[in-house]
Image (cartoon, rainbow, N blue to C red):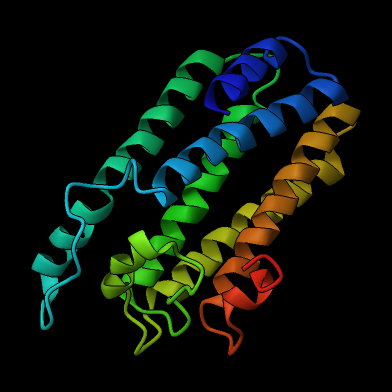
Length: 206
């Protein structure tokens, strides 16, 4: 998946056509899927693979939480940096832009899950990853939630504006796809606080 995504990203980088924009979009999804699968299968997580000790607070809790997901986060950052370096100045920038958007939204979500979100516990985590739920905080909604919603709403608004004001069909397509993903990121944030379990979306699969 990762190799296919990179190959498609390189193949579509020099063309700003509607087909090339769709190709860049799906290239970003393939690369992201590689990272998600590597994380959820437990192959690329972090050096700490045990539950958070009861009563851990403050900076120590953050250090232990970081150790639980460090390798995954560094891999995402490194991939984004490589995509940006390779595709910077390319005619079709949407692969790294979509990847960056997903990375920002996921980072905001993870911070909210760590700081406080009532629906942070996910029933669909594989059994081998269940220890991660001990790092979630579900007894409150942290003020950072408002900050993250404002950021995601800003990204959504900017993408909609660019799609609405662009004259080129390829640019309209790219920014519309960005807007769609930003909207999904906003919905994901709302699921963290609304009285609806995210697992309900996937009960058909589990």
